[in-house]
Image (cartoon, rainbow, N blue to C red; front, side, top):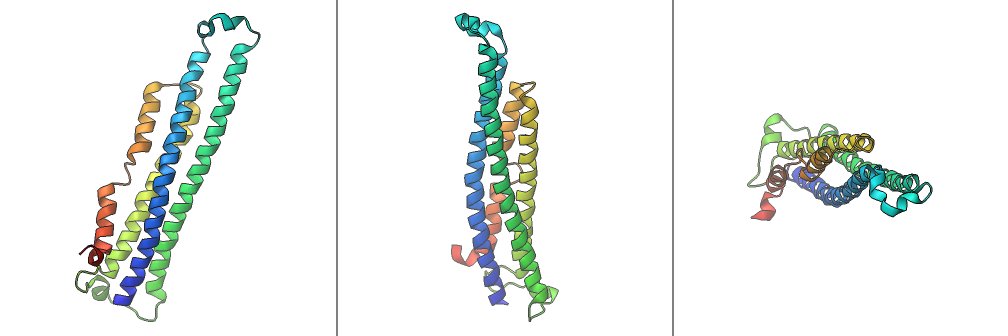
Length: 198
């Protein structure tokens, strides 16, 4: 049983690497979102001929500048979608890790009883703790990915009817990551790696 727990702890080390990658992608997504928000904010200003001053006499200046801004926005939207795909690959990795962990129990040479699954040896986590931790991490990050995807989808419609308060609210949702409470993620790791902390 102790060997099985060690195998699960190895799975958590890989999950930890995924979480570090998630944090990097989260930082990139926020930067991309802020760049897109800036362009959306400018589009409204570019629509008003009064903002061109003496440049307004140049043929097609408004259309030309607005067109360039729209091209930039489109490129940023494509980049955000690629970042979302990379975040989704982490979700798929978490799902596979959880599935493999459950399969390892079912297909293993040793069949554990419920009592054995919940049994702890010293300060080591139980097998049930490990499985539940993997399930919770997958669920949290999957929910967060769905929220991020929804926010990025909604951002495209804001380009047509910009709203500063909506942009700020969306940015807060991306930054806060409400579905991934840091203290809960940390407590899962504390349980799984208890003997390494002591």
